[in-house]
Length: 159
Image 1 (tube, rainbow, N blue to C red):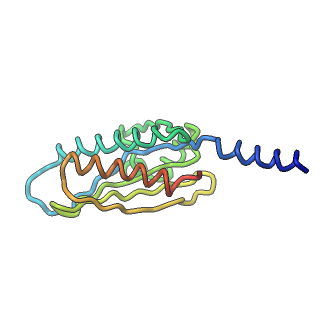
Image 2: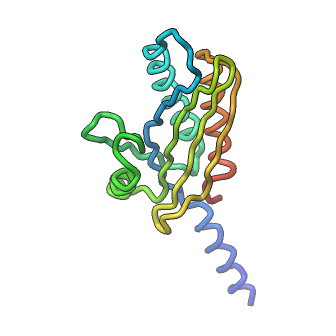
Image 3: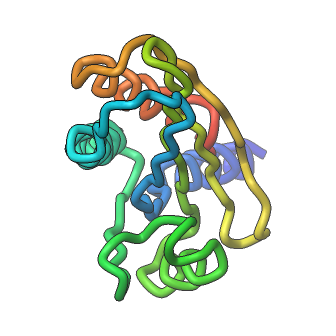
């Protein structure tokens, strides 16, 4: 009986130790603030930095294996490539989960990061969240990305 209990404990430990393979798409950006000044270049730079911070935060989690995706359009977003195409690309690179998202600028003071993690085995989301943040600065976007990475690790992926 002790051998059976030890085998059960070992198999549970082995399953818990398996890394989760996650493909991270580029995020889309939507500005509904109505501001007159064109901030496209600033937002493009912040969006790229957000992606880097998000990937670095997720890569720091030892149980996650982040796999890259490439798209013909140059940006692998749900808006440009489409969800079905992204899911296929993610499976092709060995991912079992796919992170998609969008940054939304709601006003000069308020923005948000909308994201979902999809289980590519069941084709169902494991989470679908919207995190708001204050400010339209490099620092505000960096903090939003770092917090999103922590939230994804804690609430969206299997332990």
